[in-house]
Length: 297
Image (tube, rainbow, N blue to C red; front, side, top):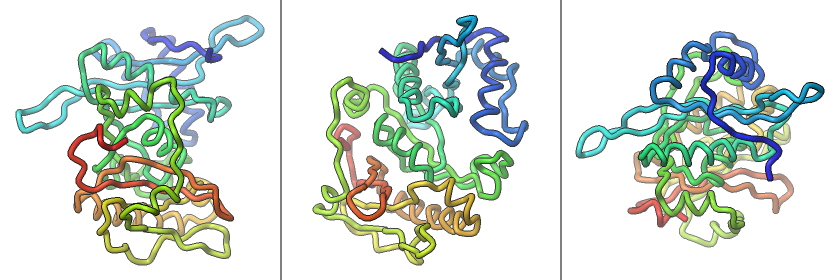
């Protein structure tokens, strides 16, 4: 059993706690915090705010350690607009990272949105963050073929300052077999880099550097295989702190390679960590020409 409980949040006092959590997760800029009154207005008008709590000593009061917040929106289809759920915040207290809490919050969100009768959840994240990519693509089964340049304009919090706020917009098709399998209790086989290199694949690999930080390729490889592997830094935030100019080079390389791939018909379907070599490496797997989501398993 998990060490936390997850439930809906609906009161002004709970919104204040979510404000405080945001300050811990995205420190450095009060302007990036969604205020309590906006959180509450959304919750009272069709949105969902899920909180994860533990009992804190000595008074055994509840302590908020994670939250997921989103609201209804629309996406376009050939038959006109359809309703979806737009997930805007997924925050985990720094002391609870890598404990599986983000996955649990998203699973609870999945259950609630399906109960509302919707089939799609979308959200954005920085495509250069390996931790987020592993959760969103590998564990949850979201897919992506949308790259948004400078989605939020200039951001001043500690995680985003100094770089264009480029984002992936991912699609989480909540009623597909792909997603149901990823969220099941059974253990899913982990496929390594060697598995994909045996296929018809194009490889966009990083350039090792004596500094210890990988450098982006100077040119984009010819994208011709059924599969495309795109390498990103294992720890982009540490790289950014050490060398902002290199982080900017990675941002503009990622923008170019993913926009080119999406325009050519590729879809992000998997994310892998490779630990077989002298250094760990991170790769997106993109599949070309998939006709159904269930085939991307």
